[in-house]
Every structure is written in structure tokens, then in C-alpha cells.
Length: 112
Image 1 (tube, rainbow, N blue to C red):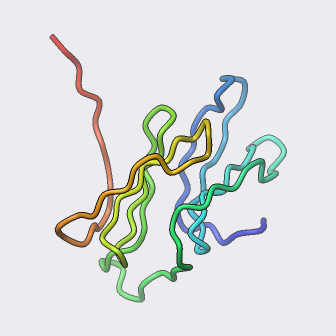
Image 2: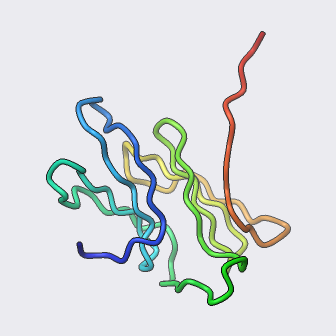
Image 3: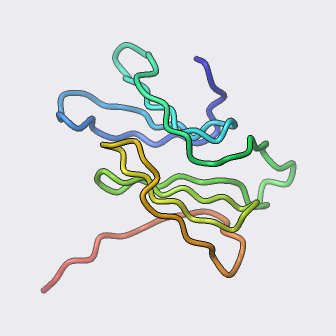
């Protein structure tokens, strides 16, 4: 595999025919891997600078969370949160957070 794989997120590909693995590599890119062929089918640049795992496991590190066709990626070094359109492969929004992000999750809200 051409990247180290610290963060892995599975998802169905846009056609719904197979499962892809989204890996946030130490190079700051999302690597899209077809799980059947184990081939990298796309690479999306997100974080500008390469990063390393902190020695202390509770220290902030980049994280990835996927909802539908959007990947959310944190960059603790810049206090940024990036929204990546997985269909186009483009970073569509970046915000600077008031605090350093450490871990990432989300929920789906439903109207009643």
C-alpha cells in the first residue's frame, strides 16, 4: 500500500456496488481504496503538511469522519476542520475552530 494507514473509514462506493476504505494517511491525503482489489483508486489532498502519530495516545491528531458523500477531516496543527466532497474530490469548506480538535464524530438528525 502506498501510504501508512493510521485512520481508516469504510463506506459504500458511489455506485453502491462495493465497499471502499477511506484512509487518512500521514501524508495528509485521503486514500480511497477498493477493498476487493486492494488498489488505491483515488487520492484526495486535504492537510497541507505531513503529520505523525503523537507518542501520547490522548494527544490530538488528525481525524476523519464520513457522512454520505462528505468526509470531515480535522487538522490539530492549524485548528481547522475541512469538509471534503468525496464525489468531486475537492475540499469544499474549511473553518478554523476556537480550540484544537481532538477526535471527531457525528450524528444524523431526524425531523419528527
